[in-house]
Amino acid sequence: MKLCEIRIKPKSFFGTPFKGDTIFGHFCWQAKYDNSLLKKGLEEWIACYDQRPFAVFSSAWPVIYRDGSYYYALKRPDYPLKVLSKASFDDKKRFYEERKQILNKRWILVGEDLRIRVTKERMNTDADLAPRGEKRIRGDFIQPHNSINRLTMTTGEDTFAPYIKRNHYYHPDLELVVFVLFDEEATDIENINRGLEQIGKVGFGRDASTGLGRFDVLKVVEKPIPKKEGENACYALSPVVPETDLYVGIYFTPFTRFGRHGDVLATSSHPFKAPIIMADEGAVLVPKDHRVWEKPYIGRAITGISKVAEQTVAQGYSIYLPLNVE
Image (cartoon, rainbow, N blue to C red; front, top):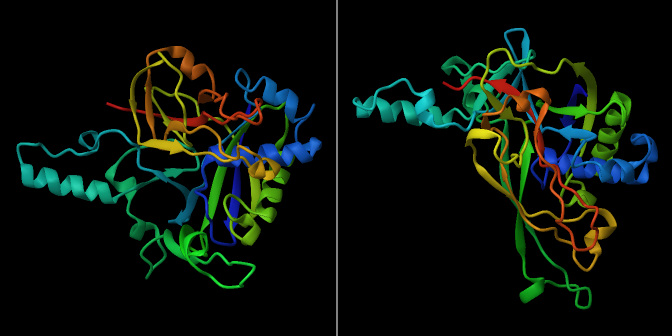
């Protein structure tokens, strides 16, 4: 398999978080209607997806330019804060002050070599990464809506009452990066790039038909796959469903995916998929089996989640970066 990074530029608000499993679903719909994106077609690769993933997408991460170099701003690893804090619990005041500082530093900067070094100098708050005078690089806001009764052309009560939805935005100067691990027998960098460009044009996630989820693809660059160099844990770049009996410890924030079908299946008799509980991006998995390091990805495929399309799968895989946990 090969690894590439795709730099993108958000052009609108987003109604759906830019997570790897959702990007995978969008790419599959693009491949459904454009057979040139995957050699031999989508159906053949979906059939063997639980044994051989044709592509694994990371979540989208901010790209930060600092001191003449580019860095990826990743989520602070999810292992216990006592691992990050050097203060002794005997000095309770200092211990809790340092704990509070670490909680605010939700980002960790990783260089273009993709080696994670968890130090206080590399951990940052939103304000640390935002341009001067700004407080954050991304944020959420409430968007009010009204349902219109087409008979009276007014809003009203019950189903026609006003309602709200939560959208999020990125700083207009910010670029994002999505890492993609792909099987060379299934596709190539050019087709991965073309698939993402098409997603950016039609919109990503919820309410794409109203203009949300638009982005431009800036460039695609092939990168070497990070290899284990003495590290003893894996850092997940997207939500993941871990394999069973392969890890001695997993540190994570739970994330429940209440998935919904896209395209024509969104208006079917069963538009919603079965919910999936995942370990969110930033999870730290400590393997007990050396076989984990033989593949450039962790996790497994999720099947049996649809009542209207039995072949439906969800990306429970994740690209990982080697990480050392004491």
